[in-house]
Image (tube, rainbow, N blue to C red; front, side, top):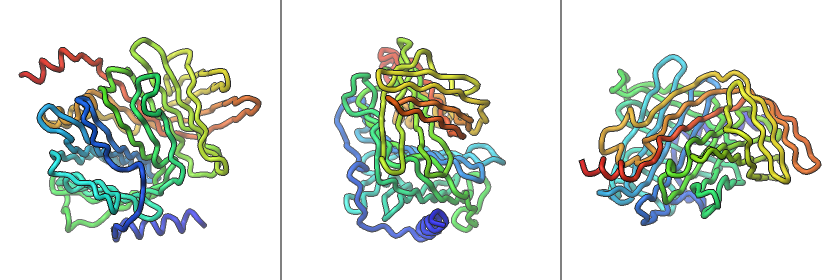
Length: 353
């Protein structure tokens, strides 16, 4: 009953879009000055209709445009090809509202409102509205200045639920503002904030994000696997328990993790993770650089050198924490990011051409 009421509220809010003075301390852009500075707010939700909605609001320093803003979103519907919604603007073309705590890049907006984050995406391809439930406890995946050289990564909404709707724009044969809205249904996923001062592919070869899609009050395991160029693999385990909030452990894995028809074993002095993953059901495969023009590739920087695949995968995990043993199973959304090797000399030559 509570869930039905929540989604009724989220649906109503998504339709009327009335920003107010909500507060969220960690949602503002930092606007650092480092040459390789970039940060992005990523949203990823798998809906019960089978649709997958992903978006990134990116701020980055470019050789010719400091603090450039860019949005790249994808909407994958079961019955059609991936729809790409993207736009970029230099600093005077995007804004952050310190009162509403909202970020707007061109026509795209995201801001916290009462018990939800509201997001509007719109260009000539499509228009998408989403209302995303705010989870009171944010979770640090990787702290700033960590020993692994990884970006500062924070889950600002996970596990979160969402209500969404969309309509086609003239670029793909739709009526745009005159068209009818199509509901996406109820979604489960996360919101992630990443800040970095170096190219991510200078540090890692692969980043796999794993989040269960069950909408339940049970213990929820969230895993991030980082594979380094020297062959090491590190897993960050986050457990969210209804009463105790987040619990975090960083564990070394014996081999690179393959989350599909494979098993994984990771451990440290306090924690042991042993799991198996079943056959993956592909949801989307997306290479950002295939969708960008020359300037947009420059704006995305190293984020354009990533091959992404998203899939649903069944899992069984046994997690031993001191004397506690958790046997967990269900279905999860997997995002598998594979990075192109970073070559500073090659990148400089590319910029001179």
